[in-house]
Amino acid sequence: MSAGAPKALVSWSGGKDSCLALWRARAGGTEIALLITAMDEAGQKSRSHGIPPALLAAQARAIGAPLTFYDTSWTSYEEKFIGVLAAARANGISEAIFGDIDLLAHREWEEKVCAAAGLEARLPLWLEPRRKLVDEFIAAGFKAVVVCVNGNYLGPEWCGREFDADFLAELPEGVDACGENGEFHTFVYDGPAFGHPIGFERVAVERYESPPQLGGATYHFQTLRAPA
Image (cartoon, rainbow, N blue to C red; front, top):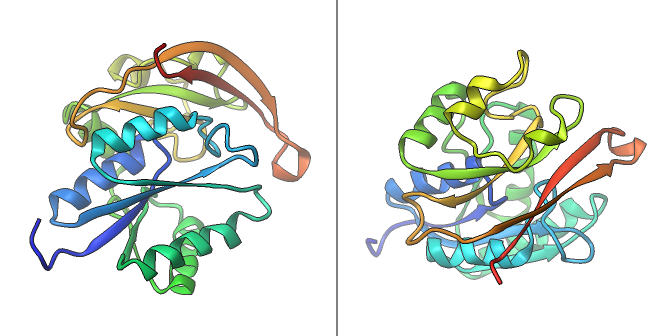
């Protein structure tokens, strides 16, 4: 990495889009200096994806970047996120990388919180065709498993499946290949961004009913754990 390379953090979900964004940014000369991940209030699993901290930490080690967790509710999410960004800025980080593709409301929020913390928001996947990105991810050799599905789109039997060509071919009509509309989330366990594969075990599929103020949808989570 050249001495003048920008230092960036990645808003790290553990899933395919943040991973592809990280990989592209690093290939373009950006130094990945930090990963940040929002956890639930108890710090037991990541927000949205439900990934346990041990597996997120294993990803960070394989990527070769430090990882910062922050516990938060959805109501305190923005305030805490800005605080983490500001701390990173104080440590010399100038950019924040996000894996969003084309949802303008997401980009506007990311630019707002980054501006509040004095960082530049970067979206390496922005406005590229969703299916093209999925095909690039798989062709590059990344491997991922589906860890969460929205019951409005997919049943619990889709949890724990490999995110691969077979998965994509069998998706029902109307379900986006990227899951960009919140249909599903993934956990990446191998690929060119990692120095080695991440070991994990599938445990059980758990059902979660979100409260009415958060949409009231039913979600199914594939519980994962680090190998014993």
